Length: 194
Image (cartoon, rainbow, N blue to C red; front, side):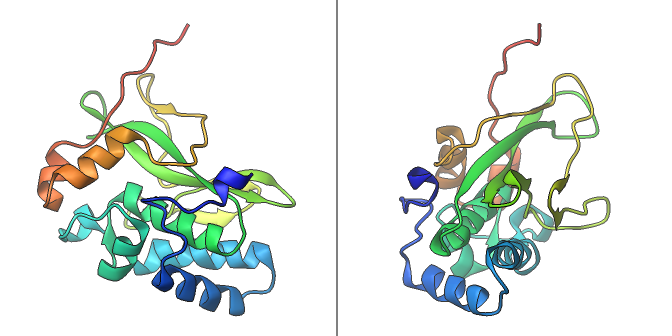
């Protein structure tokens, strides 16, 4: 579990502002499960999704997401992982591959988290931010993610990564404005299903 508790370049658990917020959320909590819920709800509700709100700058590092109070789903997942890890709760990064529009190509990755909960094991949560048609919740053991898989080319990727995928970091660090990222959302090629 060590790698799911570690600080890194983009999940900068040791940043003073991350540490301060993590302590505050923990102090308002009644145990680890409640702390995980509070961290999730803070990121979901207090950090605005860059595309939904048309906000710059584009953020990637957890502390930048917190400082600017905005981020794409990927960046929001970095902040949530940092807050959870700062509270001693193992957290990783997960991805879905989804259609950008209603169906069919183009496709893009969607970033979310997995948190290790003592009574439930690994549990996926999606702090993307709710809006009409999107209602992600923290309700272990039942998942309540922002998006469901609707077609064959979409996929829930089963891995739990300790660090963000390179293609995600590249998109968030290469383009300076939310609309440039929106035009070049990261994607990966998937093997066909057998």
